[in-house]
Image (cartoon, helix red, strand yellow):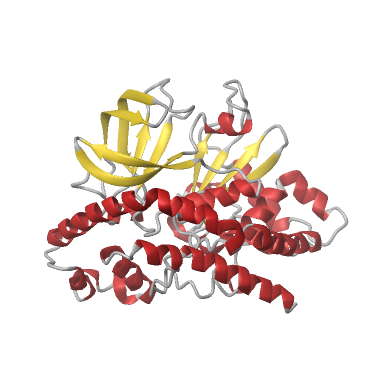
Length: 416
């Protein structure tokens, strides 16, 4: 797998899991590479699929996140902490030291994925008889220039072009049924906005708390590849018991000041300047409903006051940083060795050669991508990644992010 990172290769292996309180060993675990762009970095991420009825704390499918895009190592953990604190559904995340075939791989994040029995665990306390609806995943882009922005298309075959994926079929449902998703996007396109029944109709179709809070957190959390910025990394779950769709944010590796874009517009405090604002159907229509418009703005202010400020986050950040400090030093040393091997593979002798190599010329024309490459091959110090400044246009210190976004958002609403 490590020799051919662009191929979809898997293997069977034995996995041992050791914690302070438990020790498990699983046979016939399927391991494969995880992610798309994540396959192009020196340190890789992995998917684990346990055999048949084997479970780790109730879950069969797990992801080992390399954390290679975040020199603070803790943004994803904090991202999930924030979602849960806001009363939203999310994956569970923790840290693990990973070894493979007696080789040190480093510090990873471990999290559950959105595969059976995830829905029954989250929505029905693990009830195996739970009857669930469809779980649709946004995959960013598909054929024919289609994206997962929730635009309505009259041709149902367009929904199967690759921009969406059916992560879980409804209980007893058809395998490739995009009709419910098509109906949902049709509702979004035609949804009432100013009529007396607008709020009621929206609430019939969506768990609107999940939508409003998630969109507010995307803004305050600087989601660089979420729905608003890129139409990516979210799920829509059709809850049969309430007949509503729940919005679920996912893959929080690019948030809280870690992004592939220039973060200046994300930090302005003016939500209308956030990348992608104004061209996403769900947000556009929601904001045309006066009650949801007001609710969104109030939610932004409430979350900014209660969650996105240094008083609420610094102690948690310090605890995580202190816990991981030695592991980060270990991981960074291993990653430097991986970078060296990657450079040798491309016939380069040192990190700076990347910036002049014709192999990367097209990719590095974008200042943000160039900046991203620099911080991947030249390690950002752990302390700078935590506290700032970092000297990068695509990365702030994580404490710096909370301080600046809190102040700028507060100032923006004070001027209204």
